[in-house]
Image (tube, rainbow, N blue to C red):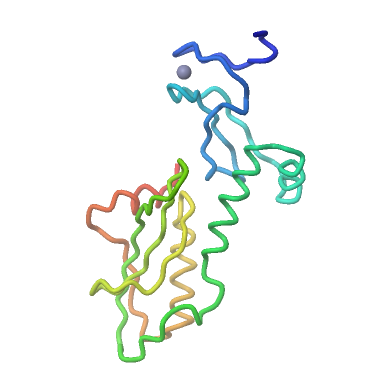
Length: 175
Ligand SMILES: [Zn+2]
């Protein structure tokens, strides 16, 4: 085992390994990434990502495993997002819509958290759900505009859920 083969050494727990073995937060794709020790989570490298989507795809195709995972993470979110106002239910029997925004973790296989935004009536009935980025305040504003386009004057409010849903706050602020 040479230093060249295992260039990363954790100062906290003395773990040694390669860049590909480090853990990282995929949701930071686009800004920067902290790569951490897989044993104790000490930050061992911070990488700024200046790559464009096209460059990222080229690097992923060339075998960059981290970018492959980051791209699939991002595309799963994009695929789940609203494409058309027709996807919202009509709710024709309701004259005033007071809606609630919450985020919940719906576990799936694999180690990445899978957090969804749920929009529901204040009475509880969900009307929309899509996957969430970490740090979703901008999506909240977009969603208000989309709800206004769909429901017009009937749309009265969208409020963040105030009960104890951890992910609603955690995913609001991002990092
Ligand atoms: Zn460590």
